[in-house]
Image 1: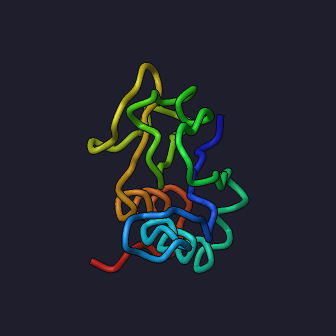
Image 2: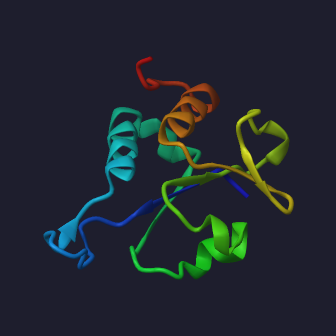
Length: 115
């Protein structure tokens, strides 16, 4: 399995009380920008854009029902997981967008998030 980045497909609709109904995920959008700045990552990384509504069965099958939030990077090789990686069964994954971008820059080269 290759590293796989899961993002919420934008725009999406959610009828939060008293708010507008069309949205994008800020953290997912930041990673979309990182992908634009580092297009070469796409040669080594799978990117999956899923719909907003839960349950997100594809993620549940991989990392459990309690871990279906996005963005999430599921590492293809859990042995290469950084210390801050989360774990579910034999899989390792990252959920913090800055940690995801730092990992991708270290693993595949290119620009990472500014400190």
